[in-house]
Length: 101
Image (cartoon, rainbow, N blue to C red; front, side, top):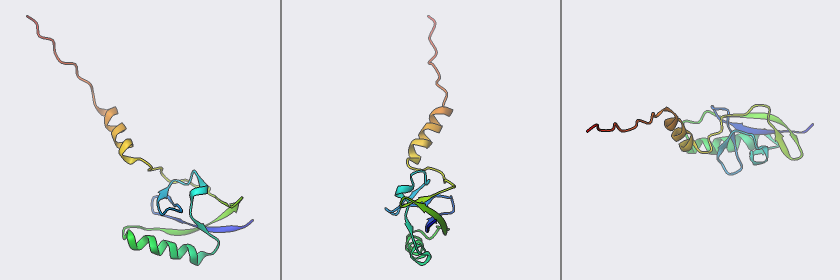
């Protein structure tokens, strides 16, 4: 089976063709190259923009021109919505006290 190389960050997310990070659940969007040095060059380019990045190049198999990913990273498509949902679930609704006359 044919192999290719993908770029993963320290969180386990994969680099997309648009230069963003994704969980890898949609392999058609994941950046991959047939040669290690091409994927490594892409990692260097991404790392120059984000000095905190701790990425690595990983070899994966390809099927139907899509990488086969066995591990998925966290899906942070909309982290603001996730934070808002957590905050809403921890808030307690308090009814105003009725005054007695």
